[in-house]
Image 1 (cartoon, rainbow, N blue to C red):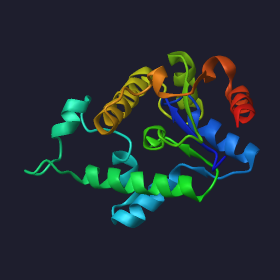
Image 2 (image 1 turned 180 degrees about the vertical axis):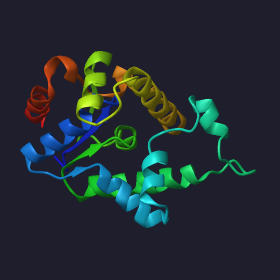
Image 3 (image 1 turned 135 degrees about the vertical axis):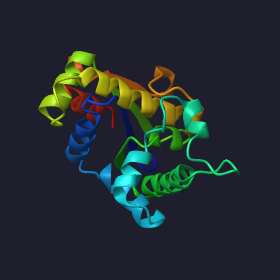
Length: 194
């Protein structure tokens, strides 16, 4: 077997990032999340905040709106440049050695890698709303709207660049409900599959 890579895709507020970090720590391998944003910013020359906002979320609420937003007359956008750099970095990280990669369409980018376990973490709206208020410091007045908006933008970005449906079970080897199982159990299950 070659390098063992686990990609973690996740609904906003499901704790997927935490699952990824704790899993990597348990396995003694690197977890790449914010580090990818830093690398993309370094290679592109864009501000890390711009990369963070544009590197996983589509403008507008649909893939069609994204297809026409911020494009020049040739149909090119800065987000396309970020996608190309992001893809290159994820492929390089996967070649480097065993790791966990959170988000950034890594599941799609590494879909042909036979030594990659593709995971999707989800949870019910109530669990996610509670998490973003208590753990992420979001306002408690409309967390469900924030969750829906973030997921809608992630889904549009994913569909635009992958031509696949974000969160569809057939795109992943494993889907786990962190609202039911809890973060620790999700980590234990994935560690057992490694």
